[in-house]
Image 1 (cartoon, one colour):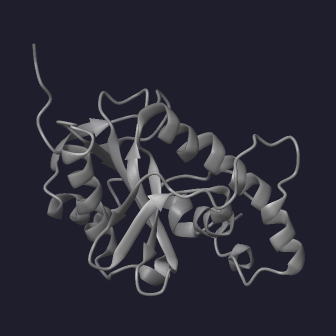
Image 2 (cartoon, helix red, strand yellow; image 1 turned 120 degrees about the vertical axis):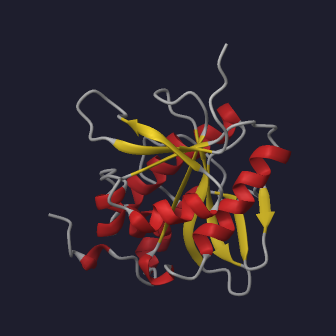
Image 3 (cartoon, rainbow, N blue to C red; image 1 turned 90 degrees about the vertical axis):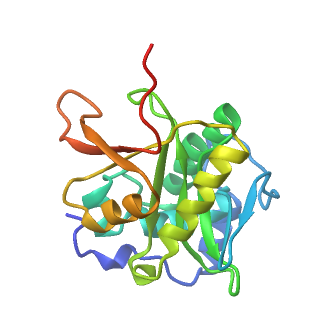
Length: 210
């Protein structure tokens, strides 16, 4: 069980860990390290930019937080190689295919990475949806709201998206409150697959009908 296994939390990198970041195990799709982001958004306190393999340590920590597993799901990422694959197979592919994806969120004053926020494109939903997750030590400081506002503004003004969705566990009241403060409205309950549990669906605008 992962619950309570804090030993997975990311710590200061050892020389071996730094080598693992620079040289992921083969086979691995090539991607330049330290590549400048093609998309960067600044807010009063935050900087949002595209994830790269250099963010593997942060991803490893975030995806193994019990809160992430409970509210979003277990992505099965257990080491740095798995974290790199998660970035390359998920966010990086979404940037190339859709022009958007989940971005890393860092504090402008310190550069510390605190979470991720962005847009996803799921086959089971008719429109892109807003997603976010933050390390628990950075909760209750308004970062999800601040980054969510920036992403929705970019969706409207930069991507010309007329409608953005969001899904959340009915028990995740903090996330529901964030979505409501962002101006999204509850539309109903949905399932991402036939055997999946029901989730609350929110949207920035009603669905267009023929």
